[in-house]
Length: 374
Ligand code: SF4
Figure 1: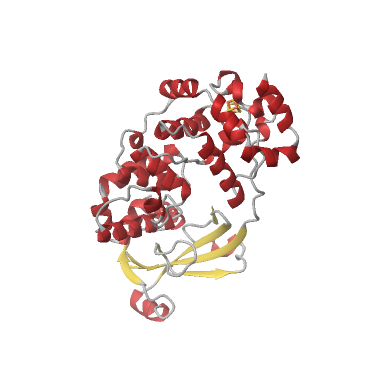
Figure 2: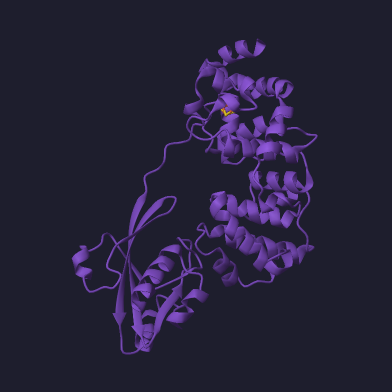
């Protein structure tokens, strides 16, 4: 009954913004049906390899992989990564190229570079993963969420961990229209999560909230009738479930036009490693020229990969063309391009798979080599 009045009160947006951070957590804390939530979790959770372990290294790797990647896609990468680099030492001692090669196709390569950098840093320091939130937070590429996830999943320490699924559950439980993908919104939900955290079992609590978001409290209109938290869910009572969570408007994508030249001579080609702070740092690709637009596709009529590849990154839409250019010898071309591309090297086509290529280049190479074999 009290819950119903509370929900009506929270309908007023002006009050909601002020009330939530102060009163709602303690209200929920007293009323949260953890038994139902945990029972639901025991019966429904997915069996995932990183859940079967409390090894902080494996949990760290899985959390970094899953930051921008769905579980179905991340699973193979996780298994391959921990098989290739099973512990801190093997990752710390690896070449960056090998780490990037293992990450190839997963995108957001700064995650792999940070994993590698952090492993080297830890290995040089004392050879161990930190076992405190503060220590974890100092690792390159580890923010509040990842530190909280490792702290709670590996050590059962009382820190909240909210991924995208967790934000959705909390915003609906509290009928909050706080914009979750801004720093202020993240801080707000982090405080909420901290307030309602089950300090007796943070590992189970965090896992259950995130899994509820992944399987039950899904985007759009979930089936709230079968939800273990239905009786406490303020959005369900208010009829606002489908409107939540609120995210900031997407920014316009910037279009970029890339023209790659695949110089070809006697089964060999030229590739270089990208440097600087632009996209695909330290990945390999064919010599490229960037222009303001692309010529009409007819101009490429004799090109074996005669099409435009469109590749969307978080803030950019790349339009790429690949032109195969047979030459008598690669050395003069290399000599000409080397001042602008010092990392340029001659490689056999059969060796391209040994290099960490961007997903875009990898796709073009696969299609091109496939059509060569026809
Ligand atoms: S009742 Fe519906 S909206 Fe609320 S937590 Fe459950 S599934 Fe999500």
